Length: 297
Image 1 (tube, rainbow, N blue to C red):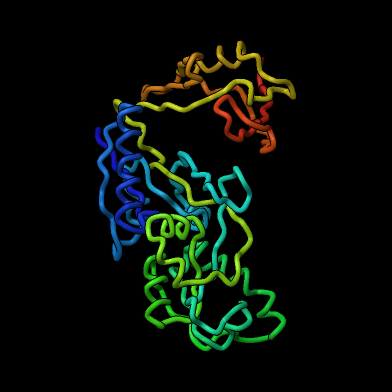
Image 2: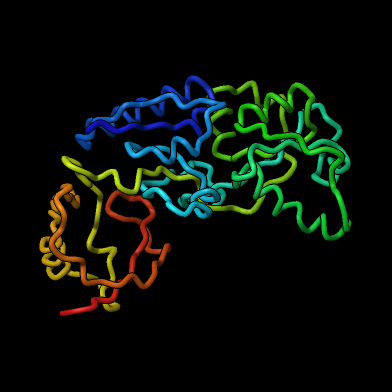
């Protein structure tokens, strides 16, 4: 069975789109999963992409993910080189104005025109509203003369700003990084006047039920990042439990594999929480220690 991949949220220009296609091609080769990179461009709604039964990889914002009654399965999250918390999969929204404008703070833009992407976006709507809330409470009323949207995509926010259709607009900080990497001249035409609080970055998701006949799950797992009943796992017991549940572990590659065949047993563990200050893992990247309680012997 073939599956689809799409990086529309961060295909901010042709060069970025090409780079994502190269990444998905590599992922398909390495995983053995046949991936078709599909175009799902504006004005097609992202909700249609996220609900596809054959979806294997597509970026999804955490805000709609939290709101949906049938969320897809999280697969992986990018860690931006310029993340507001270094080494963490987080981002922030940048509030932008034209470089030649008279605005140098968010307060300067009040009573003007503000743009937004869509109401189910965190970076393009929810983060902006949260950032403006203290000012709204202080003023006790409307902050802007006009709210213009939905502009839908980060690219259209930039276009509206440069066309003088809006005076200030929100932009996903990672999307902005990608734009500036491939369009350096854009940096001379815009300015950041404020940045919102960091939040979990949009992540790659797959259809919740995509591992079907002939499907294969492959994930990296390091036993040293597992804490079972408060102790570092030696791997012996959890390895036995994983094998009983239908998993195969390739220790040399720290790779956990499961075919679509239904497992015969549930794993006897209850998740307790995680520690995101575990330090580097075997690749040198920041790791997370996960804590579990074994529920039966």
